[in-house]
Each structure stands twice: as C-alpha cells, then as structure tokens.
Image (cartoon, rainbow, N blue to C red):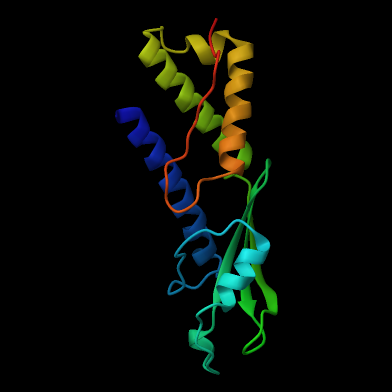
Length: 166
C-alpha cells in the first residue's frame, strides 16, 4: 500500500537524519551502529553486559544508544561501559533533536491511520482528521499508546480504534 510505504519511509528517513546529525556533531562515530532497540533501562544494562567479550581494547568496547522520544524533542545519548566486566556505564555525548519529537511521530501515525480509515470507508480525503475533533482525539491517543508500547520480537504492532467515526 502506498500510504503505508510512505509512512515507513518517513519514519526511516527521520531516524536516518537523527543518526546522521549525531555523526556530524561527533556525538556518534561512523563505525558505531544500532543493532536493535531496547526500551527498558534494566534491559539495556543487561544486554550491554550479556555475551560481551571483555578486552582492554577501547575500539571493541560496548556502546549503547539511548533514544528518549519526548513530546517536544528527541534526546539521543551514547552510553559507554566504564568498568571492564561490570554493568557500570557512563554517559557519553548527548544530542537533543527538536525536529524529531514524540508529538511529530504521534501526529504522523494518527494522520496515517485517518487516511487508511477514509480510504477503507470511502470517505472524502481529510474528512476524519480535519472535520472530526472526537475522531482526531481518539487517533492521537491510540497513536501515542502504540508508540509508547512498541511490539517485541519484531512482531507487527496493532493499531485499532473502535468507534472512530459515527
């Protein structure tokens, strides 16, 4: 579907811009990359320690990129293990991106869901988002919930809103 593809493309491009910005500001080195996302602080520490090889070579030391998507901006923080075999971590560099915020992501997802609903219900474009405050509020609330509690194990996220349009 074209709109689903454009939403995924927009999210991917936004993430790429954020990481490029960190690389340009020297907050993140080019050879470091994100393998996956962990949302719980304890899980970040455990994953950081679990299965790692402990060497004194700083080029193989482990780094964790923590992404905190607040409503007004996204805070990217690079954490580095400070002790050779422990869980102690120190904060590296931090970048705050005002153009990538939780509010922007929530609004984008909610607008996408409204477009999908309009298409499936054969409604005029913009009918749900622009003309129904109640529907827009429900969509924003559900989009925020979906983004706060992403799925695990690479399963699909479910975005369901009952009684959207009356």
